[in-house]
Length: 179
Length: 441
Ligand code: FES
Ligand SMILES: [Fe+2]
Image (cartoon, rainbow over all chains, first blue to last red):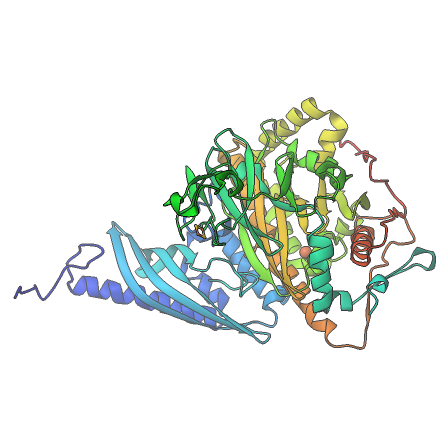
């Protein structure tokens, strides 16, 4: 029988699975859970504060999950200003697909820190967003690839690429919530 | 319900109504499949999607699986996606490049022109087996300026005749770049739980723009800052709707946003001004002032009967919708860009699309909501007819409903099997070219 070291290196990063690593893993998870909670609560102003001023939020199309917003058509390619405009729109009562607001519940799992490069951290997570409205229910299922950075001691998101697993938005008709 | 009386068309009384039975009934949907979708030219795809020999893309058109390919000689081929042997789908991926198409079931193999080139253990079929008769089958197809259409009825007129006045509007898109236009990778695919004809109406409905898409215009004026246009003046923009013959229609309006070709807007930033002016200058040199200004500064929402929309607005889009029942349709939309365009120009164009369009845009989700809302409302009863009489008694403006009435008149005559009488009301006849007022810049 082969004996294995008790404290295996983290699979994705090769970093030693020491206390710092476990703390970082915990911190990343908690930030993603907080984001999910704020979005589910429609606390969108607070949600924006989780992102750095240079943040980018991208959702590729379902038929081109590897899509690059520089040269391909994507669903969403927001800088921080347009993220704020998106929030403003959703809060306006005139984003008709979301007024009255849908009820959502976000499930985040399979969180893995995949790289640590200087002060920038990369992580990935599986996500399911259940959305209920007007007699319909449908989940958005996919993956987050996020980049994070510490600002004034607190971990913040500086990039999120949210990749849908669906072939088409056949059950949803739109991507009207923040995914 | 008599299918010939679903459209109440009385311009003399100022009345035009559509019976809501036309929008909810499964029987009507079945009739539409046979009398409209089995007869009309239907958009399949764009030639730029299959540029190289062996490139292919698959589609579902009017519930029929099809695929198209560039064959070894550079020609375009369109196939029914079903194996001549016993039926399996031959093309089972959305796009790619192939030397041959092999059916996975019993491994019959076809070349990119559809010829059957290999049958495992062909001896089992005996000496009379004619491989030449067993290739992939093609529907009737033709292409106009890169837009590829199919037709399942041999009697229907040729594509160019079918397009009538809509052809000139396809020219206005195709001529925007000397090297032609291409479909950008990535598409919008979503389902709307509403009758397909509501999306035809919505796509050429200028009346809903301000009330429904208030948040888009709010975003635009904020993003533009002090240089932005006063949104209160939007209602005064000049425009008109017109019939293009055969049920096709368009609304053509002053653009109230930037256009990557080639109308600057504060959203693009000062640094884009000179480049956009140079695109405009180049178009003026190529097309003359009138046509170039029209290309640059007017927005056009075009319906090609029955289910193709070309929006030449803050972005150039192809949108096609396939009904799957009386209250559901699958929508696919693509963006067009000049072939070879890259860098900041392409980024500006891609970004302009996202502000308004697509499932994550600041406007399209609200259209989806509006259509589904209408579909639900139809079941309330109490009201039998929808009203489309707006502008019936004046020169048709861009936010009137003339272009929808053209659609419905064609729909009615095809469904009832009555002769189609073109009725242009007022305004421009289908063949005429509108005159643009050149701007000083
Ligand atoms: S069904 Fe295609 S080879 Fe048999
Ligand atoms: Fe709209």
